[in-house]
Image (cartoon, rainbow, N blue to C red; front, side):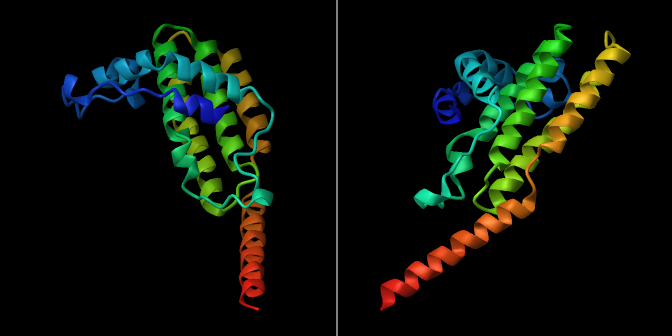
Length: 194
């Protein structure tokens, strides 16, 4: 599902938008560049697809038993682009006062992070998942500081983020998988030599 969502990503022509180095939606939707706004608008179908993919409890991006050993596949699947779509849409929803919906986008991004790290074939893939989660954690305080925010909503958010964090895969699992794949590759090479 993530692969299909990533294939839906479209980019506006950069030349049609002014260079705005001081504009970035990380600080809030009111700071979003014209390019970011256009990009979000053009990618509603991809956004809906990644939201659907993130609803699953678990996901494995690679099946090591099939010999998949491509560490750059996370990038080729456009996971970071899909992650950025989720965060941009969350910022936009925040600006519209739709805080519950915005928080749902943050949770979807956290599930995506967990999916990337789950059954990671190497520590690099696991770190991509952790990096996505860290980006979400960095943005949630701004969501919590919105003027119409409530203590009850913040308490629920803390609970839900904590529950999600407990489900995040261990780096040791990724290291064990990477070690097993390396051991299998060495064994295959030794067999082919004789």
